[in-house]
Amino acid sequence: MNFRRTLAFRNHKWVEIDFKHLQKGDNFRMFELNGDEVLDEYGNKTMQAKSDPYYDLELECWIIDLEDYE
Image (tube, rainbow, N blue to C red; front, top):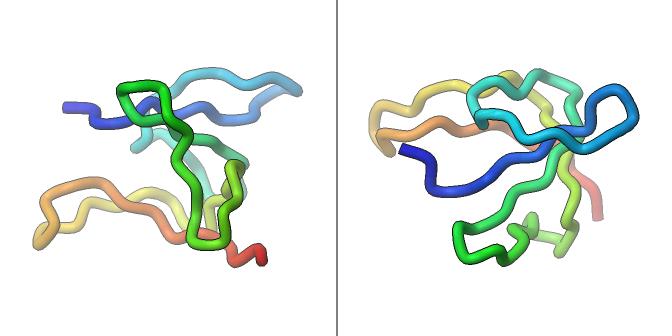
C-alpha cells in the first residue's frame, strides 16, 4: 500500500515511480495523498537517496537514507 507519491528525476524529467524502486544517488520528491509536498528535516522539497530503499521489519515499511543538505 502506498501512502505517498514518489517522483524521481530521471532523464531530465520528473517521473512517478514506486518508492522501493529508488536507487542510491537518485534525486526525488514525495507527496502526501492530499497533494502536500513532503519536506526533509531542513525544509527541502527535493531529496537525494544516500542508500537504496530497504524494508524495516520493526516499522513495517520501506525506508531510505538521505544525504544531508542544510
